[in-house]
Image 1 (tube, rainbow, N blue to C red):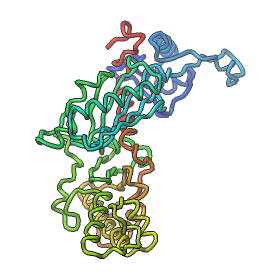
Image 2 (cartoon, rainbow, N blue to C red; image 1 turned 30 degrees about the vertical axis):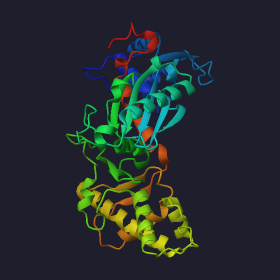
Image 3 (cartoon, rainbow, N blue to C red; image 1 turned 180 degrees about the vertical axis):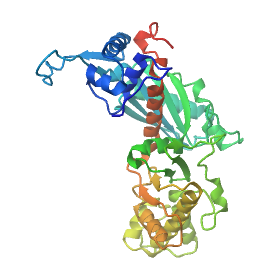
Image 4 (tube, one colour; image 1 turned 180 degrees about the horizontal axis):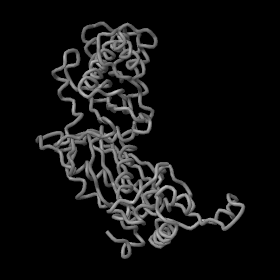
Length: 399
């Protein structure tokens, strides 16, 4: 683990706590903390004592008692109190709200969902369902709301640095109606859903510059270039309304929505065999279309081909503008869209496009946004942990 040197603005307690909060840190001895931080032994021991007093660390059995030490003076051991505080991540989509409660190690303690149905644009309903879903998640985790340090709410709208969305008099206003006024759990942060997805995808993409492309009902991209999440002055980086102008794409409608539209057109033209999976009275979802393609249904195969061509064009646009290495197709549609992704790769391999990014499916399914919201919340805690008073220690922790 790289050494954490003290900066002029970091106290010794902050430096040691940053080490303890690192996802790669577990239980540690004072010697290990010394090696990681560059602090002296007396400074590390004093910092650990203070952090134990404040509730961030706990004393463990010494290394000899734990069977990890044989000779000489036994080393004192410490670990982060992961349950000292929790974070809440929320995916507040148009039709569904999902909430996760996680401890300071990122371990998920509870997950709940709330349905919005067709009332997702009704601000009062949206706020009520969001608060009820968070409350249910905290109850399921058996967590006192006072222990919540940060709540991050992911929404399908651009979000600037202070959590505001551009006023559009419609969809964006409804998606971001003022969560901080009703979600009274710790620091409340509003984040764009695609940006949250990109944060969730960081571990799988390593050092690559990449786009996390939400692809179900609409296309929206979270963009990470040279390790930095791009936002833009108004939070609009990755908003893909520009696809209205791209030949062969023509809208920001995602894979699932476009699949339904193409089947609807084929049905209106009388090109669907009544005996096929697409021939029933109900409009098939994208999964049914892709299942029919696996059975070589000609209309379904045509839909997959057109979707693959369309996805390839979107990927080339992103790669050409940003010089990214990969596009991660994300959201609940990702698993089902495997044939579309494969077709996009085939289109990209023709040599007509340059640069050609790697196109892969996310492994996080429909929880990619809410997991990203948790990751964002943990990032905020790790950046300045002592700014978040632990519930039992509010009178002793400096803010």
